[in-house]
Image 1 (cartoon, rainbow, N blue to C red):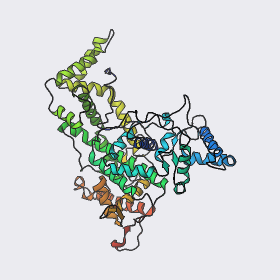
Image 2: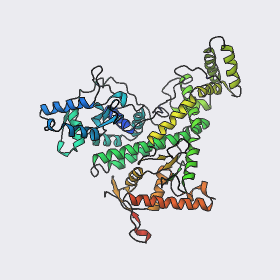
Image 3: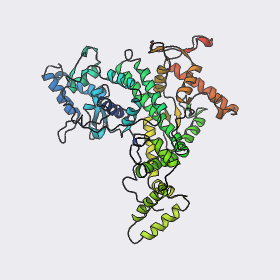
Length: 520
C-alpha cells in the first residue's frame, strides 16, 4: 500500500494539551537541567550569550578555573590541574560519548543548582520538551514549585550575580556557582517565548507527583544535596512513566466517551524480585503487554484530537474537554471539513501513476465509515509506525529500563517482553516517601511500616500491585498464581533487607517493621 502524502501540519503528533513531551529517547539529567531553566525563568526557554561557534568544553572550563585563580576566587588550581580535571569529569559535568576521545563533549553542568543550565551545549542537552511536561505538572501546586526553587537556589544571589553563604555549600555546588560568576546573564529573558501553558490533562496524577516532591523536600536538611538530586531524578522518571501508561489507557476512552477522565482504578503488577525467571515475571510481562497493546489506539486518539483542534475548533486555545465534546457532538459541516482534507491528500499524487495511486488509496479506505475516519486512517498509515517505535523509546528511557532505579525491565533482548519492576534505587526512594505521614499543623513525621502496609500504600497511591491475591482480576487464580504472589511479597521483603530498611528482629509480626532511615 502506497503511503499517503501529508503536509507538515498533519505530520505533527505532539500536543501539549495531551502530553507536552515529544516521544524521543531522553536523558533525565537533561530534563532536570531544562526544568531548572523553566523554573528560573517562569516557564521560558532562554538563549544564552555565546559567541558564534563557541561551545563549552573541558578545555574551556579549565580556562574558567584559571581565570578564577587569577582573580583570587580560588587557589591551588595551577598545581592540581589533573586532579581538577578528574573532579570536573566525575562530579561537575555531564558528558556525551564519555571516554570516546574523538566524540566526547560536555553536555551541561550536573543539575546540582537552579543556575546550572547557564553552562550547557544545546545540541547535547535536548530534552524534547519533556521538562515542559514536568513544569506543567509542578505548576499544579505553586507552593511545592516555590519550595523546590528555593532549595535549588541556595548559595546564589541572582540580583547581585554572586555567591552567598558559601560555607554551607558542598564542593560540587560551590564549583558550579564559581563558574556562574564568569557566565554572561541570560539574554531575551523578558522577551523569550513562554513555552509552557495550560494545565496537565491528568490533574490527579500531576498532584500526586507534586505531593511526592513535597515529601522529598521534607528531607532537604537531612540528606546530602547529591542524594536529593538523585531522588528527584528518580521521582520525575517514575511519574512520567506512570503518566504515560495512564494516558495510553485513558485517552482512547476519553475520545470514545467525549469527556475528560482521570481514573483512579488503574493498576499494574510489578515484579519485586527483578528476576526474569521469577514465578511472577510471566504475569508481570502479560500485564505490561496488555497495557502497551493500547498504544496504537492512543496514537489514533491523539491524531483525532489534533485534527479537530486544527481544523474544527474556533481557537487553538480550546481545552481538550471542548475538543472531545465537539467530537462527540460534531457540527453539521464536520464531515465536509475532512472531505476537503481528504481531497488535499488525493491531490498530492502527481505524475503518470497519480490515478492508480488514488484508486489504491480508495481501496484502502473503503471500509472506513466517515470522511473523518478516512482522514485519520491516512495519517495513521503514514505516521503511526514511526510514533509507535519512538513511544517505546521514550517510555524505556523515562522508566530507566534495566537500571538500579528502573520501573521497567526486560531480558536485554528485543524478543524479551517488558515488565514493571521495583529497581533497588526506585524502591529506596518510594520507601523514603511512604514512611512519612502528614502531621497536624503541617509538615511530615516519619513512622515505621509493616511489609503489608507498604504493599498496600504502593497499591493505593501508585497502582503498583505486589500481592495480587486481593485483586478482582486474580480472584479465581490457580494455586501456582497465588504462590507466585506470595513469593513476590518475600522478594519485596528480601530487597528491603538488602537496602537496609528491614530486619527480622523477632518472630513477632508487630516487631517486623520497615524502619525509617532518617527520622523526622
